[in-house]
Length: 113
Image (cartoon, rainbow, N blue to C red):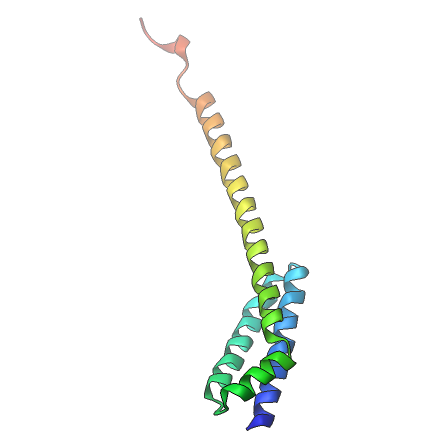
């Protein structure tokens, strides 16, 4: 049981490190597969019958909390950066559309008096 816990924690650490690396490289296509892998490992950890002490010792040994914090911070930074880019693109699109519509509108000289 403890061997299974250690192996799962080792795999979880590896997948989390891979996620951090992919985020640093802006390789967003690989993230979905890695997140699914990570979720499966977390589900496996739920089903392992171990004590709290064994679990805590494994978390400390493999520095899972530190890696998870690093992953969440990086994900939030990337998410806010992407959100800013999307908002900027959206604003430019609205500005261009309103500028084009203003010039395509009716001409004041063509009105009948």
